[in-house]
Length: 289
Image (cartoon, rainbow, N blue to C red):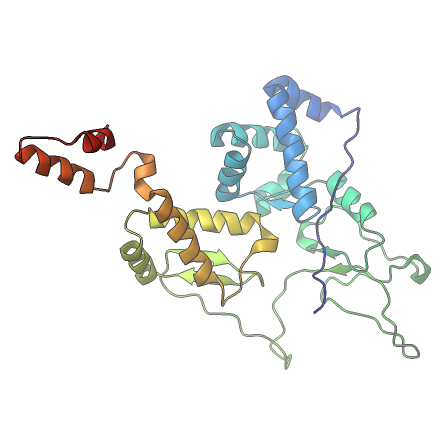
């Protein structure tokens, strides 16, 4: 089995003398602002290398993971975009966090890799062609091509730019993409960047199977988690197992009762029954209180 292509980085440079943009974030929000910017850099470099998606679900999970409120994180992120730490145009157009410095750092750090993948819509830097002696051959923004020597059949190292374009209808190997249903509750991204659509009937079924769980909210949490964890996305065959496993664990943890809504009526029933008999067993009193 071929090894999966590495996208992110294991570490990134953090200069001692930061620029004024980051100093202004620290001046406005204190060390919390500075720490959050560093955590965002870790997320970008560690996951996709040169950008990260920034949706509401991703922001919610990021806030929870770092022990901050959603409104605080959103305010600091908006400030970083306003001050130019992240590119404003890409943020507003594509909902991503990136910058020229981030992309250049990633590009320079990955020069020894066999392949470097970019989404050309997100690029802010110029990815130039280099000589074959530099172990980088060509850049192609239409297809992910491999150049092979006619004599030795050896693969030439190159950069690949992935535009995520649809396959041409004339290609004999074009894959059919699943048709989007007319009505569905939410879509979950899969490991091949296609989507699994959770229809309303499935939501009703999950509610009957897991009565103590806020199924709609947990499905939204799953969507955010999958958006934020590209390497852990599921296959078409494994996505239903993932959904049921998630909901089952949430059910075991108490579901609604964790948020102050007690759905377990057996305790109250026991107390009432004991009251009708004129006594209340001490064990049940401890359970109620």
